[in-house]
Length: 92
Image (cartoon, rainbow, N blue to C red; front, side):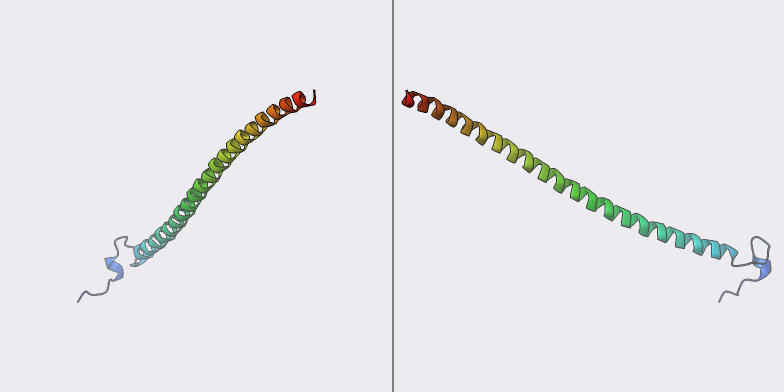
């Protein structure tokens, strides 16, 4: 069984045996806190990337819908133009 450390066993010679342990524990706590923050930020980033993909899909669908509406409008315009020409000939 290991004997407890005494003040003379301290590597710094200051008599504080656990000073290094306290710094080590604090460093581990800081590392753990930063690791949790990093994981939270990674999760947030993933959510943002997924929402960007959703917005891109919505934008693409909107563009497709606008093009379809323009095509239908053009077809309707051509039909009305032909009908106007036909009605003018009928009235005469």
